Length: 53
Image (cartoon, rainbow, N blue to C red):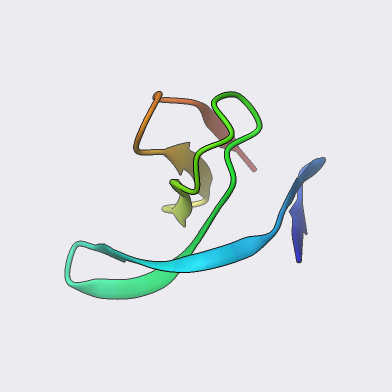
């Protein structure tokens, strides 16, 4: 589990972003396992949800 800036995410699958492998988690908006942490922000690659630290 990852908690940052009030957002709790459960790692559930591997995602490849920009050639690096990271952990994707469930988006709090669309509930898809497409939430990644990139450049200090949580970003959903499905619906566009974003929350920065």
